Amino acid sequence: MNSFGGKWTEEKIEVFIKYIKAYMHILKKYPQWPLLYFDGFAGSGEIQTKDDDLDLMEGVAARVLSLEDPRAFDVFYFVEMDTAKATKLNTFIKDKFPAVKQKFVSAADCNEKLIGLANWLRRPENKHYRGVVFIDPFGMQVKWDSLRELQGLHIDLWILVPTGAAVNRLLKRKGLSPENWFSSLGDFFGVEPDQIKERFYKVNPQMNLFGQTEHLKIDKAAEEAAKLYKERLNTIFKFVSNPLEMRNSRNAIIFHFFMASNVQVAMKIANDIVKNQTA
Ligand SMILES: C[S@@+](CC[C@H](N)C(=O)[O-])C[C@H]1O[C@@H](n2cnc3c(N)ncnc32)[C@H](O)[C@@H]1O
Image (cartoon, rainbow, N blue to C red; front, side, top):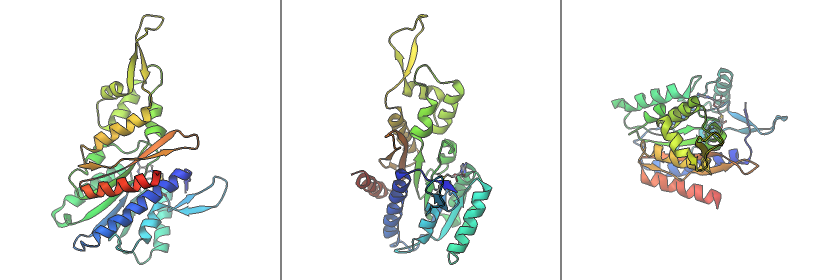
């Protein structure tokens, strides 16, 4: 079972489902293209809305599987690394959606399956597929090298980026973070660790007591992380949406939710949905 993240979980799901509906309106005009849905962090099928309660709400998997009008996906591929959750999801969707034929659940690491997906879509017999990839992790589990495999494919990607929940926490406020934290951040953004240092730190003009220069983290580091991630996504996809900014109850940024595509109209639709959500 996945625990509820609050209002932002609902907002994220709302934005994503609105996009899928708009996507289907366009894709119903192209029945020659089979449609694939890939969910890399699928969960167990249901989300627990309160810690001490049995109150459950449907996860994204069930909502996407329920969509039929104006068109449904032809193939569903769910990845969930936790074996117990993957088993639960498998039972859940088999019971709830017996009529959906092509649905697969894999208990594996999303990174490995993203590479598998890209290889599958590149096969000549699968080139006519179009698809949506949904990446919904809590932390920095998605490696840049796995995402890069999606370059040039006919897919739209929605990805939750833990700009505040993880990236910002690896950047110490005063003084530089340990080198291995910069390495992790470099792997996550697909840049050299030194580029992370340059981007997120400035040198304090005042020397410390021992005459050494000090590094200070820039203000609004989570926002800067979103800018950097957008730039990086733009090296894989032609178009990247403005992100949905997600804040916790203390108004601190926790995630940014992006859409990336090689189709301009897809980005425009995502931008409109994000704008209306925050209006
Ligand atoms: C935020 S939850 C997903 C919620 C889901 N989208 C829903 O609507 O119910 C993230 C899930 O990713 C799983 N996970 C963590 N690391 C993973 C990885 N490397 N590959 C695949 N799944 C992973 C966790 O077990 C967890 O269930």
